[in-house]
Length: 355
Length: 283
Figure: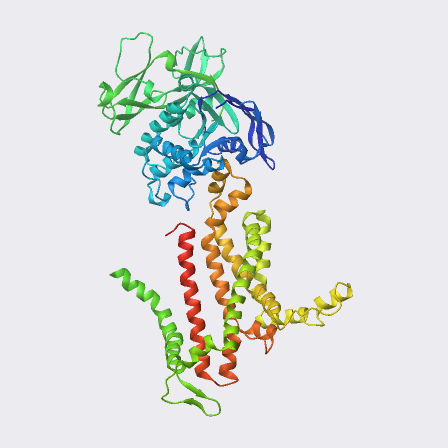
């Protein structure tokens, strides 16, 4: 086990830069997610760490070893593919044994370690089956067992859960986290699913357009986004344009908001982000709260949550999410309401940045 | 039930053609193979004998031809596989820019008439042909190599003619090998050679077997090329059958040989398909 370091890694294909100078350090045993939309370079980074692509510039280190130009088979890594990439011509046992055999393991020692790995992913007794005889979730678990069995220094996951249906995905998420915790292997997890990244990781690295936007703990990413891209990518916040006047954020039509976050210089145009779940529709006594009157334009019920579209005086529409068990869940279309937002939930970022 | 009926309807036209033009004549030929043939007077009517079949195994000459044909089939298949796999690999895994030109190069010989291609080889391989003249002029050899009217000539010709079939089969098989699976092997500690040996090769087994069956069957039933490059004396089963029918007018013997050839072919296809299943873990 060891830490993983990327120093100023660049990947170019012809004139196109896919990864534009990425540096990050993943601590020993840490679980880090690379989160971003498709084509942001996250999978390319993972493949460069695995040795399947060669960086155009920069250095990759596992522990203290420079592996930048090392062949994948010499890196001692475990990679779980989105497609699982199991060996279809080998049994589950042989799939898991593959890496161990390459390390010279034989006989009962081999058998013990394969069974150990299969037990860890709750598949003991499936050794004699072929991959095609297993369900998608089971194949996914075989792929994990195969990756962890040789005890790699670094575990890499390339969107491993995106081919599973929602219910199975939630189960596998918990299983994956427990597995990684118990093994304590340094892990790099690539995903485009923010909930997955936030719930699994010690730290999340948000990528956009080949550049790291923010590398921080999940709570920081959520509460204190560093860029407009991160703010708009995490959750589906309401985005507003405002101008700073006397420390207030003026929307126009006499509407203004107060934020706890540094609002920027006087007269500057800024972007405001207010999360759907941070807006309250029931009136509270909190004197600090921003209050904006509006009209319910649309209500849609989705089980645990109710979504509203609320139109305010200047014609702008807010999307508001309320728990369907809460008090603000039974508003009718056309009803007058007051939106309440606490100053800490009004995120302010410099304007003009386009996500 | 609808699916069975629509299936039959779809299959019907081909079934009719095959039955009328292939199965029925073949069945009509079956009794002939059990009839006696008297040189000079022809087929003895009403006779029944197993002699035509017994002779294929017992007679030295016939046995030699049968074994030679099977040996030729195996050699040409192996040669096509050895020459074809690297080409197929290059087409599938090489630079995409080379894919089309290479594929065209492979297919191009198929557009030329079989007789023309075999004649081309005669020009190259005869005693005073291009190859021998070149080698003599360079002083490599003094007397011309015997490259025709023997196994060498027939094998060169047939390998060249059936290589495209093998390559196309292997290209299809290689395209079906997921790159991720090979990458997975390399992250698990496999070097390039081991990845090929442990993953790529087994996963292309169905294509290897299919290509081999195709080339083998085509080779043992080939008539034109063995006749042209083997001459009148170096016989294989197909040329022998032709001579039995057309030269000696010994239809019973020719029929028996034909059925034996068909039987061997079916047997080999059956065995190979069993092997494929076991090898590729698809049983």
